[in-house]
Length: 248
Ligand SMILES: [Zn+2]
Ligand SMILES: [Zn+2]
Ligand SMILES: [Zn+2]
Image (cartoon, rainbow, N blue to C red; front, side, top):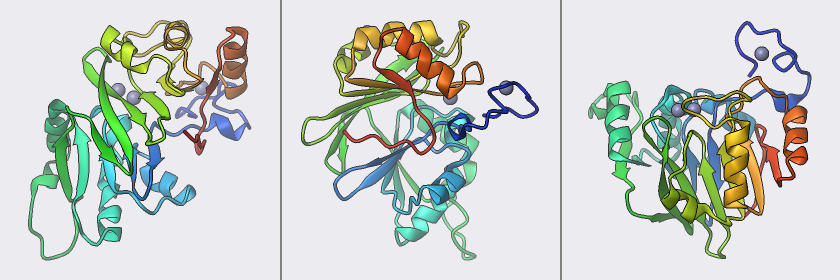
């Protein structure tokens, strides 16, 4: 947001919170940090928010709005002294990443670092980065896509579901009562592959997080309008905005 060529009140809003990049999150643990997805604006977001250290990447799925900034991982390879970056995802997403970015497979070039150096890892089993336990959770985004549950050493919990239109019972079970729940809420009207406001509200009621945040919104709502809608719904949910920080 704004959308290209749209003059609607939300796209022309003067509120900086209504200028939204595609979804990515930066998670800082104890001594290590990782990205969830590499959105197309990854480079400018890292510059704006002073992100200079990334130790790993976790992907939700290989849609372009979540991975097209992947080439910029090269810079973090350089910062990390040329070490390959571990990139955690499910097998299908790893396959897709190789077809979207075929040059990742190439191994040698005397002319320099022309490709992201990636070590892909299938993350079917829970794993840990910087003292944070990371569990992959299956959601439906018209096809199987993934969210994450993060648990800190101190027991703090955060759920992250960027793209889904349905959360299966096993995933809901894992997310119930998390301290922070971050979930997509695309728009007002029904959408076949994303949660609309009504569906997101129903899941927030069911999950009952300490605090909820919505991401992946289109221009159906301004930040202020969506904030008012969550208040009116009686739910502890707020729209997230670019650069927002949450401590768990
Ligand atoms: Zn618009
Ligand atoms: Zn998607
Ligand atoms: Zn998306």
